[in-house]
Every structure is written in C-alpha cells, then in structure tokens.
Image 1 (cartoon, rainbow, N blue to C red):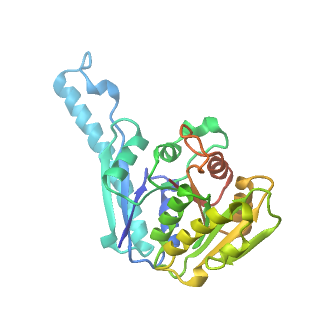
Image 2 (image 1 turned 60 degrees about the horizontal axis):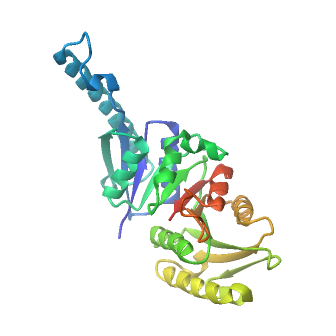
Length: 309
C-alpha cells in the first residue's frame, strides 16, 4: 500500500528543506507518493469589483493578467521542487503536482486539499514558529498545525536528518493514534529506527529500555494494567513490516514533566524526527495543542516534528 503525502511549497528555502527531509527520511522507498502543492495568491481585492476610472474590459484584462502571473509563479515553484526531488532519487511517476488559487486563508485551502485528497500527512517547512503562544497566528505552518485535527502535519526544520524516529506517547487512544500513524508510514523500511518513549511522573527513578516483548516487565503497579494493554496493542501494530530490533521502548521517569524528558531524549539520541500527539488524554478539547506538544514544538530546533491526532 502506497503512502501519499502533500508537500506544500511557496518557492522558499523552507519548502526546499521539506523536500530534502523527505529525500533523507524515505530514501530507498518505492511506496511513497508525493503531491507538491502551491497556492497561487489571490489578486488584489479591489479588482474583484468595478473600479472607478477603469472600464470593465480593462479591469477584467488586468485581473486575468495578475491571475495568470500568480498561477505561473506558483506552478514554477512546484515544478522546481519536483525536479529537485527527482534528482534526489524519487521516481518521476510517484511525483505529482497541483496548483490552486487562494480563496480565503492559505492554510485552510491547504487543509481542504489534504482532506479532499485523503492524504496521509501534510508536509511543510518550519517558517517563523515562535517560542510563545502569541506567535501562533504568525505563519501558514503554524496555522496548519492548528487546523490539522485528525490529519498529521509534519513540520520540517533543520538541515540534516536521519532515519531515527523518537515517538513520544501517552497511554490510551491519543497514544495509539500516534503509533498507528508511525507504524503505517514506516512499515517495510528496514533502515528505520524507532524508539517509543513513555514518560512516567516521578513514580519510578531512572529509566529502562526494552523491546516490545519485554516492556511489561518494567511497568510500575500504578499503571501496570493499562500500560500492559496499551503496549500489547503497540506490539501488534509493529508485528508486520518491522524486525524485532527496529522498535524499542523506553520508559523514563521525570520530575520535571514529560516535555523536558522528550526534549532531552531527542537531543541526546540524535533523532532526526520526533513524533508527538496533538493532545494527551487529559488535554482540554478547546485547546489547539496539549501543553506537552506545544512545548516540544516551540522548543525543539533542528529537528522535524510530526504532530498527530
């Protein structure tokens, strides 16, 4: 089964980096399809209605000229990125292009295309992601994360990547959604290295690292029953398409909270990709992201982050 991602571009270096990330993280794969999408800017709003001093024919000609120029510029950025991906090893038949005109908010247009096309993820370069909550509305990428409920958004940052994936999970349905996405996307890639990280509160000192078959032996009594059921489901997800040594589970105890433990593990473990859920099971429904997800997204530089859920 092919995986199909929607790669957004505006012709910037950030978009090119997003393409470079896919070339690294999915090198050697023959089951990934990429549609490169660009949103052509809408023409000036004043041309959308009669303009004093400008007859209707002139207005329509001016409008058509601007639309044609915007479409041509957007299409050029798409074709340049496709050529770059092809040179980096992606078969041309698995690369697709699409240009649409902007109607409303650009991020909303992208998410509409992603959902309408049943894509498995939206991929975007990280541009201007702030370190404070007030920066949320500052870029298209931020809005994609905001609007991306039930559609994974991959936020690409950095210059060098690898095939090491840190997957931070909470118990319950949010964590299973994260693992389902990861197992589907990475199944069949023998080079992918996956570490599933579960952070306890300060109940248990130190840390443990085991494979999925042995994980239940190190669970504390407080969460043993729920965690055992959770990791049994995780084991089933990774039964096919992975070797035993590709997937490890690490349980860490952190008195400073889950976000700090995830950040430390990501930095110390040389992971090219960190995967997080949009919200933990205790998150408030009205919040765009859980506090852990927000801290990781705003604090982790030089690393790609998949936001799932």
